[in-house]
Length: 227
Image 1 (cartoon, one colour):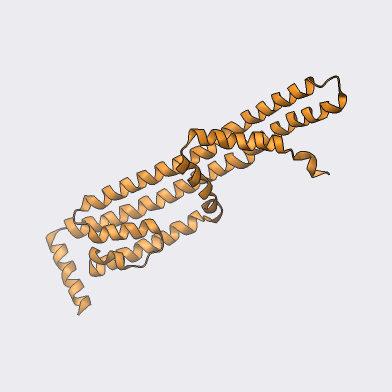
Image 2 (spheres, rainbow, N blue to C red; image 1 turned 120 degrees about the vertical axis):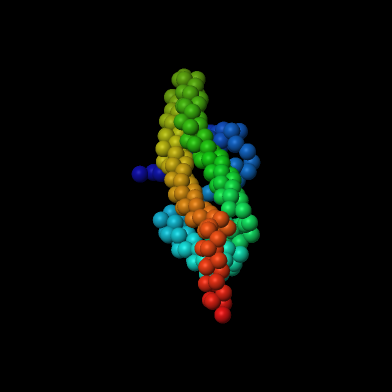
């Protein structure tokens, strides 16, 4: 089969370019940049493995905080950026609610950025069939305007059919699946980050607000470890 018959620069520009243009008009420059950058994590991300690695890292932070106090939580080597920031916040926290407040704000901002990226790909998926329909109408106009010359009917019909095909492919095989997978990855990431934040907040609360006897015994145990 001759694959070249399915390639038409005008149809490609109309559908792909039109879908991108519509998405850009609905979004900001930064959102478009993040949408393109998200293609990397889209391929590389392994949600289950990342969640398990995060739990291991959180357990190490909690263990360090239990032995030497929350002030040393940031000394645990952590690769993941959110956990590294959370450990730094834990080491500096003086009020139990501050860590949870910081984490809630951080997760809300992350969720908002993720949603903006998803919206870009959803906009492309929504716009592609419409761009395909516009191309179909243009192709039909070209075809009907050339009925007196049979040799000019074919290109118009080809444009009409190819733009419809491209619109379906972009919406259902490219932009739509990309948006759906990014949404799934976002939910998985925010879930383990919320779990990590809750666990570290519990450590901070026990350290700063626990019963006096418990805090004293914890300090005595740490002093024995240091000796």
